[in-house]
Amino acid sequence: MNAPKFTTLGCRLNAYETEAMKELAGAAGVQNAVVVNTCAVTAEAVRKAKKEIRKLRRENPDATLIVTGCAAQTEPETFVAMPEVSKVIGNTEKMQPETWNGMAPDLIGQTEPVQVDDIMSVTETAGHLIDGFGTRSRAYVQVQNGCDHRCTFCIIPYGRGNSRSVPAGVVVEQIKRLVGKGYNEVVLTGVDLTSWGADLPAEPKLGDLVMRILKLVPDLPRLRISSIDSIEVDENLMQAIATEPRLMPHLHLSLQHGDDLILKRMKRRHLRDDAIKFSEDARKLRPDMTFGADIIAGFPTETEAHFENSLRLVDDCALTWLHVFPYSPRQGTPAARMPAVNGKDIKARAARLRAAGDQAVAKHLSQQIGKTHHILMENPRMGRTEQFTEVTFDTDQPESQIVTARIMGSRGDQLTA
Image (cartoon, rainbow, N blue to C red; front, side):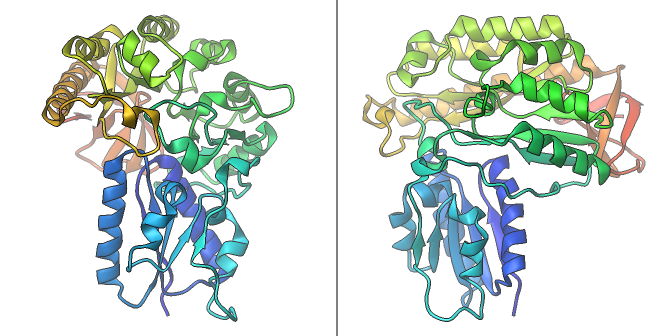
């Protein structure tokens, strides 16, 4: 019999949870199974999931094919109707040992083909902790799950539930363990990271957690934050940006658009000027700060003038790493009922945004030439700077270690040292 195979689609949190599922399935003795951890962020993500499921069934005709993740949570009926699919399990169920115990080969009787409960009733973040994944250099720690906000384009709260936080003490203990195992960088991850703490006693903020980690884990060389909502950034987080060199100068901002009217129609909580002010304030505190950002092209009712405001945001916020999403309607969201933009216009605008992003990357790379950087090696020939820029070497470097090197040039979207 074969050990289960796992395929991950979508975000870093999904990748984290796949690693946890591998441990759970292994402990339960699950055999001859294929597990697809899906994403629901766009309609295209769901189409990709279906395509992947059909491909995996062709490659594994006799396996139990299990579909989980956000798309399985938001539309289980879509996947249970596919003849390729054996079981559909929800986002809560996938992190529970009993779910996997129920798939062990020695279980007598049949389990339900669909195990998807009401995610909105979940009040705790799963306590399943994993000791890092991916490279041996960087570990990801889930500190939060779910989202309390209801942006008009977003289906994710219905896949992830309301916001739940992992208590600070649990996070600190896990990071201590990771540092003890030799990890030189830890990334805090979640669905709506800046809402961390709102459901905990005394309602601490993300900045409190960051300061606590850096104080209580003095041996941690680098702490990184994944995507944040800049309007929710608290004073302590700004203080950490200003005073803590071990907090990496790279923030990925959930901006989504650069026009105030569209931001209101998206039900975002910030305006254009808020985003610009935050990026200016952060760069004053930390001049080497770089920003990534999510931006949607072609949101319903978007005119050319609205779009130009998004395009200008790349310069106005000094954005470097863009994640551009051509808008696609998600059934069940308010935006799906709004007047749509022509598909060709959406595609063209997304291409223009990506071109602006390419220019921003080229500018960033050229500014690094001649500078000395501390680079965390992910493999013997490639590592990343504090700003998350890839650097390649012509000679082997010590893997998972931080090396100091002078930047000599660039090739594609990578620096060379």
